[in-house]
Structure formats: C-alpha cells, structure tokens
Image (cartoon, protein in one colour):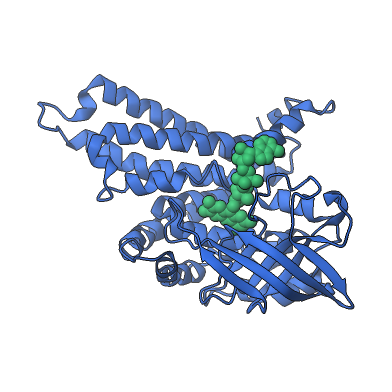
Length: 407
Ligand SMILES: Cc1cc2nc3c(=O)[nH]c(=O)nc-3n(C[C@H](O)[C@H](O)[C@H](O)COP(=O)(O)OP(=O)(O)OC[C@H]3O[C@@H](n4cnc5c(N)ncnc54)[C@H](O)[C@@H]3O)c2cc1C
C-alpha cells in the first residue's frame, strides 16, 4: 500500500467511526424540531465536533496550512460522513465550497487574513459561496445570466442583488457566515467573461437582509435562505483574482467528483438498511425476503450500481490528483451518473423494503429526500453539467480517450 493510500484509509476509518458514533444520532436530534432554522442551529454541536476532529482542516490543502491531501482523500471523507448524516455532512462541505475560491485563486494576503479561523480545530466557522439567484443562474455565462452587481466607489465595491439557496448565508445567528464569497457582475461590461467577479465579504455583513427561509424537500437540517444584499461595502482588496475571472473560478469550485462521493455515501446508508431487512424479515412468509429471486436480484443489481459510482468517482479523483487531462470529463460523469444513480437506487431499495420504507420511522424516506438534491444542486445536471459535457464533446480538440490516462 502506498503512503497516500495508507493515509486515505486511515482518514476513511476515522471518518467512518465518527459517522457511526456521532453523526448517526443527528437526525434524531434535528428531525423533531419544527422550523428549518431550529434544525440548522441544532446541528452546531455536531459541526463543532467535525471541526474538532480536524475534518474542516482536511478541506484546506497542506500547502495553505491545512491537512488536505487532494480529491481522493476528500471523497473518502465525504462518502463516510454522508453515510452518517447527509444533512450535517453537507454543512461541512458547504463551508469547503465557500472557501474554494479563496483557496484556488485568493492572494497570499487574502488567505492570511481570512483563512485562520478555518484552520483552527475549535469553534464553528462557516463559509458560503453565494452564486444562485432568484430567476436562475444556469446561464451564468450569458449576458444577464447573473444580476447581482458591484459598482466601484473609490477603494470599495458596493454590492447589490438577491440570492437564494445559498448554504450558510445566514450564519448561525442571521448576520451572515464568517466569510461569504459573492459572485457578482462588476462594472458595466455585459460579457460575463470580462465582468464576472468574486468578492470576499467577512461577517457580520452590514446590508444582508434575509427575506425568506426556504423549506427544502431534503437536507432538512441545512439552512437555505433567500436574501438581499443592499449596498454592501467591500474593500477592493477583497476581489479574488481579477474582474472577469469569476466564471472560471466558480466552475472549478462546484467540483463534480465530490457529489459522486456524496451519492455513494447516501446509497450505502440506504443499502445497509435494505440488506438487513431482506436478510432478516420474512413478512409472514416461510423465508427471509432475500431468498425471493426478485428481491435478491434487485439488491445485487443495486450493489453493482453503487460499486460503479464508487469506481467512477475514484477515477475522477485520481485524475484530479494527478492533474490528468481527462479529470474535467470524469468529474462531470461522476456528478451526473452518481447523482442520478443514487435517486434510482433509493427508489429500488424502497421497493425491497416495501411500504414501510415510505414512513419516516425508517431512514429511507429521509435519504431519498436528501438524494434528490444531488442531480439538482452544485450545478443542475441539465442546465450545467450535461451542457459542460456536450461542450467538451463538440470541441474539435476533444480527445475522447484522454480519460484513459488513469488506467
Ligand atoms: C441543498 C442545496 C444546497 C445548495 N447550496 C448552494 C450554495 O451554497 N451556493 C449556491 O450558490 N447555490 C446553492 N444551491 C443551488 C444549486 O447549486 C443550483 O443547482 C445551481 O444554482 C443551479 O441551479 P439550476 O441548474 O436549477 O439553475 P436554473 O437557472 O434555475 O435552471 C433551471 C432549469 O432550467 C433549464 N435550463 C436553464 N438554462 C439552461 C441551458 N442553458 N441549457 C439547458 N437547460 C437549461 C434546466 O432544465 C435547469 O434545470 C444549493 C441547492 C441545494 C438544493
């Protein structure tokens, strides 16, 4: 076993133990609470324990002071934590998403100023990436595709606009996260390739007005608000890269391979429940239901699909870690195939258990609600991911088998 894979195996083992000991109890704490805000706030002790376990530091590369060792290790962490509780795990990985632009394209001065709270193994620091807007952002690369504006005023940018579905945008107390990275259109240039920009906005945010708390189908302990940014003043020193860099940085931040790992985690959690049921429950018949060929074949087929998603995700992560030319394509496949397979697998596992899976006394009903987000978020599969794949295939320079560099 190489040093890298030994380290990854040890991280996976630590995360799996944490998921079983800590996260597996989160749903029982959060689910009975009546509002999304209460459920979200109830995750704070779990979030603190993830920080103390060093999992937030794992999302920050070693070169920048964290313990991150690349996409494969992050995927192992995501798969295990999601298998414990998808909602609470998403709280951690949303902070990773919020930090992604700073990690990828921030200046040394910006990192020195904003990263330290996220490198500590204490507290509950939150970061947020504010892209999505009412009216949609799938056409981010078209003029008018993004409507939040930044106007230059001396040594500040003045931000105005509306956002929605942004994880952690409220922070724990409604005043915003410790760091919000806002995607906006800077100046009057209509071409997004020359105008999209990212601004780092530390909390508490003067001018953040939460207008609504959305009630999502799944991820019930995750808070997704709609909010306005009203004359938010941001020093020009907080611009990430240059005006016009926004499109590339945002595209890279919404990494697809991680969603493949989340999909694997949610499928595993559901599979364990369905397998246990099938092996032990007879439903009043003479044999455990797994002995009925229809059930046995369905479970076998589901396991094949889970392994396929795990393998594809592992290849995408290996390509990302090596900087291989096929990394972008494999990541899109992992996101699209992994997320859509997860939804189908959850439906099939509910069929194995039958009507009892339809109640919230078993975890499958909650897990399918969580899984339904995967094809829709981090760039919806239709509007964004599939289109990215289509663009890749249509490019005359495209080499369909550059992905085989991994084999
Ligand atoms: C749990 C959860 C957490 C989230 N966290 C965040 C976050 O932290 N930050 C954040 O910014 N967002 C977040 N989101 C929003 C999420 O990332 C969205 O997926 C993303 O903004 C894109 O939405 P969309 O594709 O539905 O875009 P929309 O613009 O709303 O498009 C909707 C639909 O229109 C069609 N469409 C539009 N344009 C095209 C096109 N050019 N080609 C083909 N079809 C098209 C497609 O059918 C598409 O599905 C979160 C969402 C959820 C559910």
